[in-house]
Amino acid sequence: MRNENSLRGWVTVSGGVLLTLGPVIAGCTRESAPPAPAPAPPPFVGPALARYEAMRIPGDNPMTAAKVDLGKELYYDTRLSGDGQRSCYSCHVSEKGLTDGRPVAIGAFNKTLTRSSPTMWNIGYHSEWYWDGRAKTLEGQAKAAWSGGNMGASGKEGAPGMDAICATLNQVADYKRQFQAAFNEGCTQDNVPKALAAFMRTIVSTDSPWIRFRDGDTTALSESARRGYQIFDVKAQCSKCHSGLLLTDQQYHNVGVGMTAKEPDLGRYNVTKEDRDRGAFKTPTLLDISKSAPYFHNGSVATLEEAMDQMLKGGIPNKWLDRTNLQPAKLTRAERGDLLQFLRELTANYTIAAPKPPQ
Image (cartoon, rainbow, N blue to C red; front, side):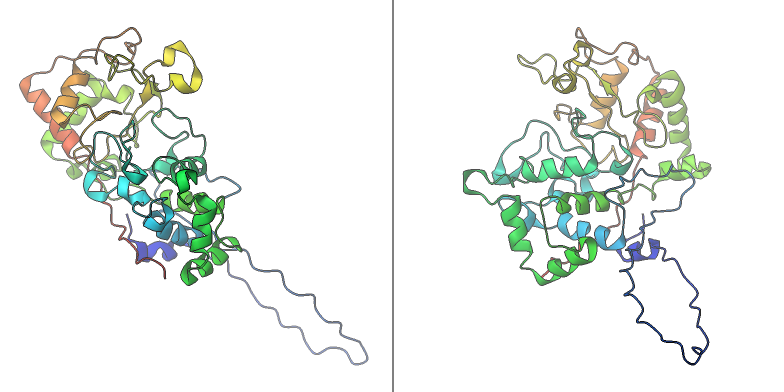
């Protein structure tokens, strides 16, 4: 991925030709020309990579360089949270594969949440968000995280809400300028999520051995990892769910995790109320999987080796286990080692440096 200094280099500005008229014919009266309309903000153009499909951008939130720059500032700024202590980045740090490295997330006011922080890699290519898919837009997810437990800007129990936080940010000169550039208005509870979503759509795993391998560079992965990919794809059939360039089918599966609890988290069922979705959670991408321990929606598995072995056993038996996509796979010791090496090499480099807080 290109660093933040290259963001403006992704913007294309349409050029034009200025035609100069000759002298006005004598005797004609020249009327004042109407004021020119304000120019539209230039479009934001992401990485031009044939291996990625075009990202779907909502019509009411087009990508612009000014909006992405603002979203990046907000993403790293603790002033956006209800307690002034947490930023979006707090739960999605680069050293932890864009997770927080905890079994379950810690939200604002040091409140323990119920699920782990998912990775942010390629989040703009998803069609639904959260482990249970309850958010239907990335903007909706951003607003829910801001106002909910993650960032705590609900306005409850005396804490500042979204409007109060915006009032504070509107007093910051740099933010005042950036909001005007991006939205032609000050900070609001609706345009903050739009700016955050615009920035999050730039978190794309372009700098990754897996992407280079898929692009035809067989040397991007080690010989062991290449053997591991064949096991992953054919013998173990992991690619039934961890499919394609994004290494996720973006579907929901019950793999048995957490189902032995007295009151298990029913995941997708809480959204759809369909029995088939009981205990089903969204397939996570495997990008940066070696950095993002502990694993699964509840952080119940400490190491990558344990997580792999649990899935090779066919998951944890329960009434709603997805046996269509999950079957035990018997591997030799060498095959297991190659598969593990493949997973370890699915790294991605996050090169976006944290900005200085606007003043």
